[in-house]
Length: 182
Length: 355
Image 1: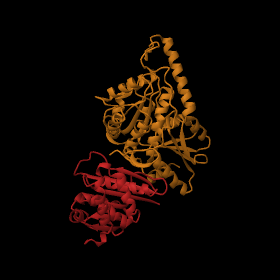
Image 2: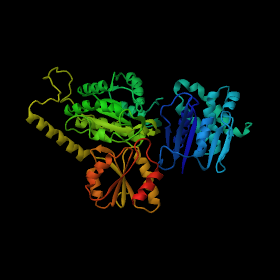
Image 3: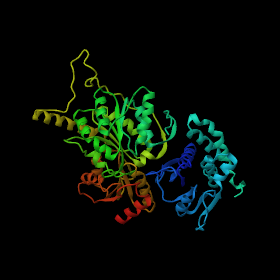
Image 4: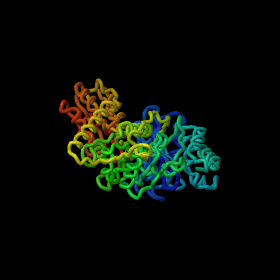
C-alpha cells in the first residue's frame, strides 16, 4: 500500500511542520516515508505545500502531482489542489479561510472550520496546522492520535516542549471534528 | 531545524542535515563554506555543531576562498570539507585540479541545482560532467559518489572521507536539490572505516624531522610524466577496488534502465510497473560515477538487447554508458532538463515506446 498526502496553505501556517509531524508519525509506525517541500522563491504569505508519501514498500516517487489526501488551509490552495485529488480521494478544507465550491463528484469533501476552531477553542490560530492533522487522522485512519503525539515529541525542539500539551489538545480537537458545528 | 542525531536511532531528517551529521560523525575537523541553495542547511548545521565540538567552522568570503581553505587544512592531514552547489562548485574547479596534483584528501559535497549559469534552485543532475570530467586543467579524476536516498547521503558521506584519505584524492559526494531538501528516515551508524595513517606526508611542523613541501609544480618534463603515470596507476587501483553499483533484475532483462542518484528511485518504480506487464526490464545504478562500472555494463551488453539511460539533464551519463557498451547494443535516453525526475508512469510509458 502506498498513500500520497499533500498539505498546502499560506507560508506561515505551519504547512511544512504539519507534514514533518505526519511523516514522523509514519516513521514511528515503521512505514517507509518521504517528505518533500515545495521550494522555490517562497515568501511569508505566499503559498507553500509539501508532499508526504507513505508506503509499505519503497516509496515509488518523492514528488506527486496527485494525492489520495490533500489538506488545504486556504482558498488559493483549494483552488489549486482540488483537481489534484485522486479519484475516490479526499480533500480536507479549512472552511474558515476557503469557500468550498464542489466541482467534482468523484472525491470526498471534508469541510472543517479549522482556523476558527483553533481561535475559539485554543485561543491560538497557530495551532491550525496540528488541528488539521487531527482531522486527517480521523478521516484517513492511516495514523493514530497516539502516534501523532509521539511524532510531536520528535519534531518540537527541546526549548519548546512546553507547547506539546496544547498541540495534543489541538490534535484531539481535530480528531473529533464531526462534533464541531460545521 | 536541525535534529539531534544519535547513532543507532532512526530519525526523520533532510538530506542536507544527514550529510552534515555524517561528516561530523566521520570526524570532520574543519568545515569551510559559503551558502547557496539548495545546500545551505549543511553550513547552517555545521556553524553550530562544529563550534559546539571545538572544531573549526569558517563562513568564507567566497567559494574560491572556502575550497582553498579546505586544501590548506587537508595538507595538515585532518579531515576537512566544503559543500556547495552547481554554479558555485564551478568556482572551485581550479582548486580541485590542484588538490589532485597535491594529492590532498579534499571532501566536497555538491548538491546539484539547475544550470547552466545561475540557472535556478530546482533539483538537477546537470553536473554529472562537471564532477566526473572536471573543469580544472590537466589530467585528473575526482572520486564521485552518488547517493539516491537520504540514508545513502549519510553512508556515502562516511565513505567519501574514507576514500579521500585512503587514496589522497579529492572526493565528491554528488547529491541534488531533491535529496538535499527531502526528508526520510535515517539510521546513523558509527563511522565504519579504519582511520588512515597520514604521518608520512602531512604537514605537521618539522619538529625532529626534515621539512616537507606539498606542491603541484614539476619544472622538469620527465618528472611530470612520471608523476602522471603514478597518478593514473592510482586511478587504476581505485577502479579495481572501489567501483560500486546496484542492479535489479538485470541478469535476464531485455531492457536495462540506467540511472544515478535520486532519479533511480523513480526508475526502479517504473521497472516494477513494466515487470508487472510481463516485460523483462531491469535496472542498473552506478553508485560510484568515478570509478564508473564500465566492465559490468560491458558484460551486461552481451545479454541485454537495449539500455535506456534516464537522467535529469540533457544527456550526460548516457555518453559513459555508450562508451562502456561500445556499440554492441543501442543506448537510448529519456531525460528532462531540470526539476524532479519524470514520474514512474511517464518513464514506463516512454520505455514501452522504445521497446
